[in-house]
Amino acid sequence: MRKTVLRSDFVVRVDGVDLSQPLSDDAFTALRDLWMQHKVAVFPGQDLDDDALLAFTRRFGPLFVHVQSQLVSPDHPEVMYTKNRGTKAPVKGVLDWHSDQSYTPKPVFGTILYGVTIPAKGGETCFADLVAAYETLPGNLRDRVDQLTAVYSPVKKGHIRRHSLSAAQLEEIPDVTHPMVRTHPYLDRKALYLSPNHIVAIGDLPKAESDALLAELTAHATREENVYCHSWSPGDLVMWDNTSVMHRRNDFNHAEPRFHKRTGFHLPEELAVPA
Ligand SMILES: [Fe+2]
Image 1: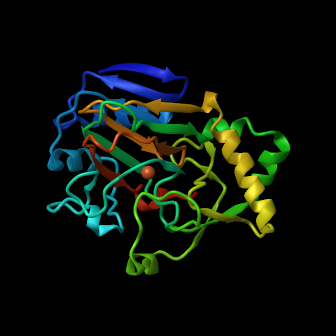
Image 2: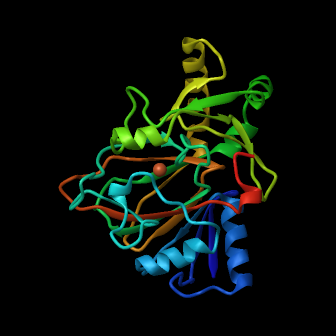
């Protein structure tokens, strides 16, 4: 296993590991710790079928199943297919900054995205380091967000969403509240918790003030030095920690096919976030 740290404590590329093969407990723990420390891990050149992808995901914790059942693999409800061909819900355009399933009471902890078919240009997945964002907030603002919660909704007017949810699916996910600062359950590391695509209110602030604070925090968190964009190649597996980063997808050429498989996992119950 050969690691290349792309940014200090943020984004590590790992070569020379075949994730289709079972890892020993020691190798798995080393890999998990490396990923957690760096928040985003990139494993190029993988060749994984759904079973292998699920077996790898399952090592980290209980599998996540997405509420949008129209997007999952026909054989495995724990594998989500995001593609722009041959699906009722094709992916297209920009997907704005968000943290996965932040609009649910128990957001997915880790997300794994595996690139199968990749357009020649665009479609990068960008990550913003929310630990760095928290640590570099001015002291008075950090003290303020430490005390705040935010209200999340799956549908936020005027923001770009990848798919529309059915009325029944929306019924399943009423608005939820999370703290704006979370502590990593393994590393005792604080991060801003931010999902601009889903936050509809901060605390009980008047709307204008809430919107202004969200815009200020988002601008701070997405400063160039806090952001890394991954340009996909087929066979790339990228995993990230939704407590420590948020992400977005850039637009891509829709004349070309794009296909990713996605899985996710929760933490063991006693470590579940928000914490
Ligand atoms: Fe996402």
